[in-house]
Each structure stands twice: as structure tokens, then as C-alpha cells.
Image (tube, rainbow over all chains, first blue to last red; front, side, top):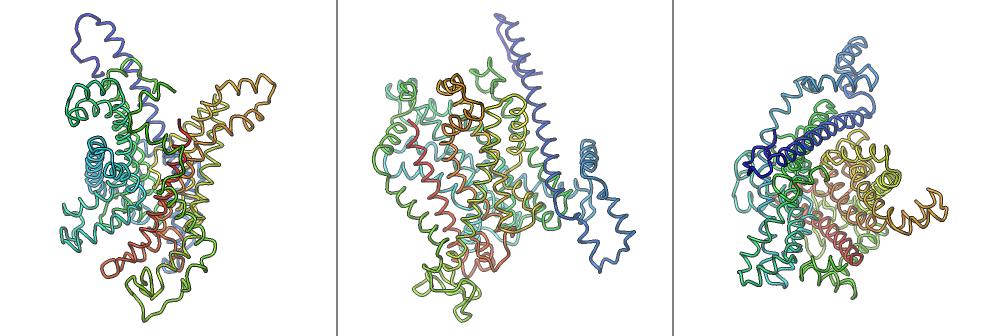
Length: 336
Length: 286
């Protein structure tokens, strides 16, 4: 069931290994259960908030004189969408359907919500993954430079960069990148938002603020490791600084860094809304924006809960990997 | 204390100590000046500009930044600096509302959750977990959709999206303070639960929350600007900073200053806020 159990172990303590595997399995089951509950509660919360939209979402379309519906027809359409029932009943029906895989129909296009989102997901996935990779790379460069550069103005600059990145609005970053890379340098065309160049620029827009958060954690962790005895021993043995950083400081700093990579995923998903708009992409972010404009509650609900679910699942996986990554945590899993 | 001194590197240890003792470094003084200037813009915009934010000079449209118009003009010939100055009140007030909601709602939730424990803690814990799982900007978009688009509602939505971080921090601080000897002493002396909570736990748990609040003020400016950029704030005659950038977007190719100037104003203000927050944080620790 767990990887810990399949690791080759010496015969010395088979029962201890089995007990550890059992503990891990229980921990994994508990964390998975918690994650499921969080996703379901997120669905409930977003549903209830959206139910507070004044009037019902299709009134505007139905009531306009051009639509030419009679009162009976309007009532029929409302009851088709279930809008004539109390909120809690609607919530239970909607949740029940969602659990069975029926996510409902878009109010503005009457397409299934799954089709609307399914068409948008690949673009956003490509964007988000590229952005995360870029963010990790930028953070790694900043982290290494913060240890390798001698103390001085240049080092101070590297250490101040994450704060600058975090303070810059992402729409400014995006628009400046478009101006400089596409217009001035002609590196990519604005006409095809899905071209590699455009995707890279969009990903960079998302990556810059996100890399800052990762870099802050990495730099702090590297500084912490640098103060440890083993790091001082390594340095006093005369190892070159680069080797000390790469072999002795980086490894213990990876755990907090991996944690923060999971946490910044939320910023990537939220930030895609603005980034996709600026770069003219059609992804989950623009679907959300259209759904907001049309008050298309079913689409908006599923898009937001999907983002939350992705966030929860990725962080669940990271949590489950923890004890496998760090031997020190193996006996104590579940205390986090 | 000795343990922490040993585990922090020479680089990390030297800085905060130097900062805490001496007068604030230049960057902090500059940051304070920026914030004071923007506050003054918000309170008495008329003092800083002789132009009218809504009235343009059509002949001067798309004037590049220069002597007459420091930051240039827009497509109607309105002075950009004037619009930024007049937009600061709305941007600042919104961020303030957002942080106030976060601090008060999140603070009360965290306080009760940490102090009472039991089922209150369990319920609040779940709510916080759910709020943290929904990407913050999306949560703000959902809330502003439900409330209706205007700047006040965007501020409320931003506040809602910040509740969870405040609740989490406040709970952690209360748990830390609650086990202190002086709390025990207050209880032994016969202090009621509410008295101990308000008189002893709250003041001691508050400081990190205040420093987070300042940091969140910067975050709130960014989130509100993002919402305004997408058109979820007040409509155009208003000149919220995010809206200015989104207005300028159409003219990016021939009048880039319309995007860059308000964008940089946002960045500089947020940077100043986070510099101050970090400085306060360093002064407190160790």
C-alpha cells in the first residue's frame, strides 16, 4: 500500500518496518479523508456565496422584453434550472449530482459545464506548469546567489529582489513583457496567444511574484542551514563555497521549499485570471471571467471548486511525500 | 535564546540586531515618506495638483511625460498624475477596509478558536482550511460577484479572502500565550474567562497580528487593483489605480506611460508597506 513497505529492508526489524508502514497508511488515509472534506466544504461555501447574487442569475436574460417569454415559460425555465426551490434544497441536489459526476449546464450557453471547462483546462495547465517551473528556477538562482555572492551591495540586491517581485502588480509585469518582448523586440506574436513565445511570456508573468515567495523561503532555509555545525565543518574543511552550498545546504532546505511550492499553487491559479486576460489566452481564468460577466453560476462554481481541488490534491501529495523524503519525519508522521 | 543565536548564520544574525538598535535605515525612512505622501494625496488631493481629474484638454491628449504634465496625459487629455492623486483616496480606503475586515473577523475567529478550543476550534479550523484552499484572488472574485461590482464591495471581498491568514496567525499566537505563566497567574487570581482573554491574552497575542496587518495592507492594494483592473470596481470616471492601468492598456503601444506610471505607483506603495512591516518585525524578534 505504501512505498515505505516496499522499500528493501534488512531482516533486522521486519516488524518495525511493518508497524511503520501501518502508521503511514493510517496517516495517508486520514489526510486523504481531510482533503476530501475540504473540497466538499469548498463546494458548499462557494455555492452559498454565489446563491447570494441578488435575484436569480437567469432573470436578466428572461425578463428582457426582447426575449419575449410569457410568465409561464419563464417559470418553466426557472424550474428546469431548479431555481424555484429553496437554497438548501438546491445545494443538496447540486452536491448530489456533482458527486455522481454531473456538474450541470452553463446558464449562458447551455453546454455541459464539464465541456466548457474541459476545453479550457489544457491551456491553463500548460501555463501553470510552465510558470511553476520558471518560478522554481528563478527562486533557485536567487537562493544560490544569496549564499555565493560575498556580503555587500550585490548580495543585498539579490536578497531584496523577492520583495520587489512580490510588490509589483502582475498586470504591470504582463503588460511590460508584452511591450518589451513582443512589440519592441518582436520575440513573439500577439496574434497567436498559444504560441510557445507567448506562453513563455505569460508564464513568466505568473512566475515572477510566485518565485519571490519560493525564494524567500529558500533563502531563509539556506541561511538557517549555513549556521548549523555540519555546514561550518564543511566550510572549515576548505571545501569551495559552491560545493558547500550545493552538497550541504541545499538538501536540508528542500523540504520547506517543496512545501511553499505547493502553497503558491493558489497564487498561480488565481493569477491566471489576470494573466490569461492580458495575453488573450482562453483558459480557465478567462472562463471564470466570462462566467462572472454572465453570472453563469454553475460554470463559476465548478471552476473555483476545481481550482481549490487542484490546490488541495497537490498539497496532499506533498504532505504524503514528506515522510518518504525526509527520514527524520518517518516516526512522527501525523504530527504535522 | 542561546539556541537561536547558534542556529542563525552570521549573515542572518548580524542584520536584525544592527537594525533594532540604531535609527531606522534609509530605506525605511523613504518608505515612511512614500506612505505619508500617499496619505496626504488621499486627504487633500487639491494641494498637490492644479489640474482637474475629470476635465481633459483635448488638444493635449497623449502628451508624453514632461514639464507640463509630469506623468503625461490620457486619451482625453486628462493629467495622469492628477488622476493618480485623486484615485489614491479610494485605493487607500479600500485597502484599509479590507485589512480591517481581515483583522477583526479573522482575529475574533482565531482568538475564540485558540482560547476556547474544543468544538469551536474544530469548526473554525475547518472553515479556515476551506478558505485557504480556495485561491485567494478567485475567492475575492466570487464574493465581489455575489455582492455586485463596485470598489466598496471589492474591498469587502478582499477582506474576506484575508480572513483565513489572520485567523490562523491569531490562533497560533493565542495558543502560545495561553500557556504562559502570567496567564495562569491571572486565572489563579480569579480572573474571569473574558477578563483574562481581553486583558491578558489579546494584548500579548496582538503584535505579530499588527505586523501581518501592515503586510496585508500591501497585499490588499494589489488584490483590489487586480479586481479594478478586471472591471470589478467602480466604473471609469473613477480613477482607482488598477482601473487606470486597465484604461491605459488600450493605448499601451503608443502611450506606455498610461500603464507604467500607475502600475509603478502601486508597486512603490506596496514595496514601502512591506519594507515597513519587515522592519517592525525585525525590531520585535530577538
